[in-house]
Length: 340
Image (cartoon, rainbow, N blue to C red; front, side, top):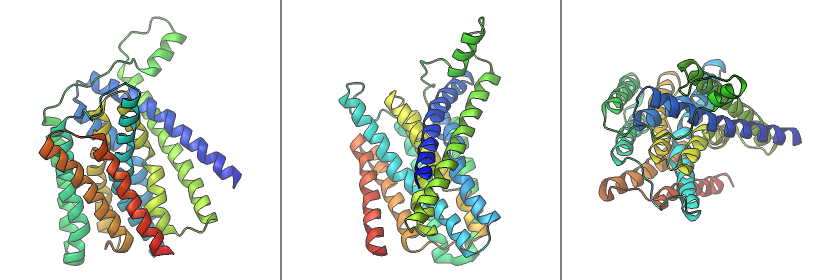
């Protein structure tokens, strides 16, 4: 048990340091390609850091047979948007509040309203359809719904690339470029694409490896304490696999780059509600019920609250994001009541 805890901490540290390298690299890449903050946060960073939690259900569904493996896959797919819209929102709000108390920023999330609103406007109907349509229409709607979700993400990506957004704010040189300059004098100030991609790819691999170490040892501990596989897939696994997004967004929020921080979360929510859900629709007995359905309802409620403030007040308060943590506690309380 002690070794599991030590490895758990090692995995956590790997994710933490890799997330800092990833955000630094992705900012540099975005600036080098003249991409907007919305594209960098909601597309590049979101899809890149969504790989660990996307891989988990695919491995469970395709490489492990049986009903329990499919339950793990479904739980992991539904757990990702749930964690992003509750704990991830909460951590952004908490980081902004702490940073404000440290007099590093004002008490407001200075993200681009239209970019965040676009993400949520896509997430809400697509995720709601993915959860509710199979319950109403049954298996007959599976293929058309999967096509709708994938097509919706393609449209979302197109509109994000075409939409108005400020350029990437960047005040730090590429970390790997600093190392190269130290080891070999004469390195130009502007790093090459090879160096940028090497840092981004290396950081992403480190995050994925750290997440797997974290998940594996969290699984050992959960079994030690008697947690069942569905509970692990729905609650514990997404906490670990969503760590890349959480740490990236914490780093960006602390630096005042709120559009990147929030876009990393909301962009991942859009991605997680389309491609992984389509895999669940096509290759499992997709019919969310019980706590799985309740987690989806919580995710939709949290997104509605944030979208409501963005729509009616044209701003976003850290307090609104902190409510995500409250919704997570509601889910946890219901879960405890249910299993006791």
